[in-house]
Every structure is written in structure tokens, then in C-alpha cells.
Length: 148
Ligand SMILES: [Cu+2]
Image (tube, rainbow, N blue to C red; front, side, top):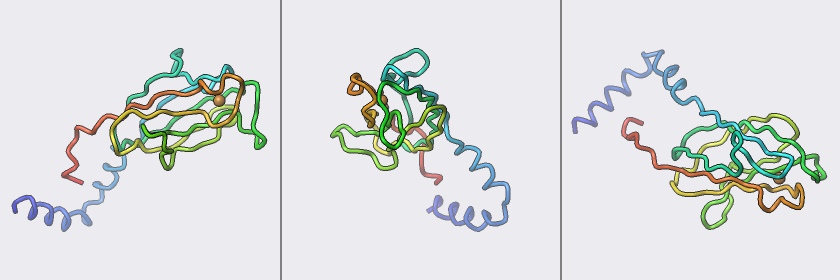
């Protein structure tokens, strides 16, 4: 009951409080994760091939991917692809991209369901294409969502 009246008080105060919105936007700034999609048909984080990237469930992310073409290029000019698959190999919505030479920022949201996901390349970029990917380890959020 006390929690409920507190919530009502917040809802009443919120429209008058102009700073509140600005602050909550800052805390929701996506985390930047830098990767390369390389000419040898491998994803790298720094020097690490096929890294395991740890994220928090529901976390907003920017994947900054520097892509270099391998042997083969798709008809539309994309040189690598990126798709996230869950443990049953189903594609995760919002996680399908085609990569072009150079740097690109992909805005994504980490899956809400914790677990081990894999990212695969979706462009046949060379004979080694099948081995191109990395792991996304989604950890459950430790922060209580009660205030949201
Ligand atoms: Cu590729």
C-alpha cells in the first residue's frame, strides 16, 4: 500500500519536474561495443577471434563494426552480415544487418531472456564463412525494475 501511494505521488510530481526526463535519458545511453568483421571471415573484438561478449538483458547497445571485405561480396554490395540466433537457432527480432565496407553503428537491444546466443554471418563472404561468428552472453539484470 505504501509503495502504491509513493507511485501516485511520483506520477503527480513528474510533469512538474523537467530535469527528471533528461537524467533518465542519460542513464539509458547505449553501451558501445567495438568489433571487426574481418577479411579472413572472422569476427574479432580487439585481437580476440569469435569473442564472447557479455551484456545485460534488455541493455541498449551500439555495435560499432568495422568491416573489411573477404573474398566474396553479395549482389547488393554487402560484404558480411550479422544475425543473432537464440539457443534454438531462431533469429532474434531487430538483430539482422548487412555490413558494408568501413565503420557502421548498429543500434540493438540485448535480448530480455538471459542465456547464450550466437551471432552468425549471413553473407557468404568466403570459403571460411561458416566459421564466422561470435557469442553473446546475456546475463540477467541485477537492478530491480520496480522503479520503472
Ligand atoms: Cu562474413
